[in-house]
Length: 234
Image 1 (cartoon, one colour):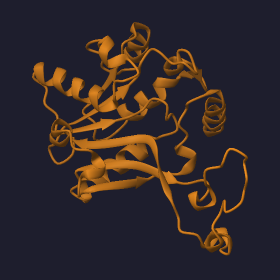
Image 2 (cartoon, rainbow, N blue to C red):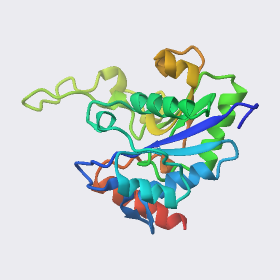
Image 3 (cartoon, one colour):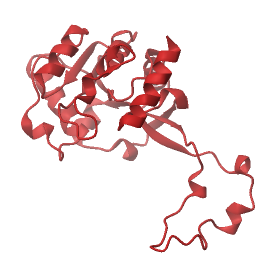
């Protein structure tokens, strides 16, 4: 709770994963993947409830054993490839409100970001408070400037690949770019219900996270890199 406002953390964890089967509960650095996010949420000074939204009973049991709430299993409609994260968030808000639990803010935490820490979470919440924000979303600095990238034609020609105006600059003199890292999405519940995108809100802010905390696991390579970081942090 912050300023007497209640915060619901939602961890979406679908059972199906094409690239990494059973991804959300695969053991990584000695714990199921989802446990890293559950523990980071439970250790927060501000989060009132940590809820795992899943369609999988195995994930549900793992989440419960780690201390998260799993009062129901997500419907098949919300577990297919067309369902969005906001669909899952709205479903959670609706289910909690029907049980008499009302939250002011909702925090979406993807379980595929195991290096995101409690400090990152609390820092984002504190930014939300200090800026009287409508939304705070985590970002990280781009590994390489997007100005050094372009599409390629079918023959892979590099002609005009990088504009001369960019080539003449040293990389350290180029503007700093950031990307969404998928780790933290904090919203005001009323805006979620209204269907307003956080990018459309006038008081939406970026919370910058360290690159080492921003690995988002999508495939085996990401998994191996994240595990190396987690093992090194022990």
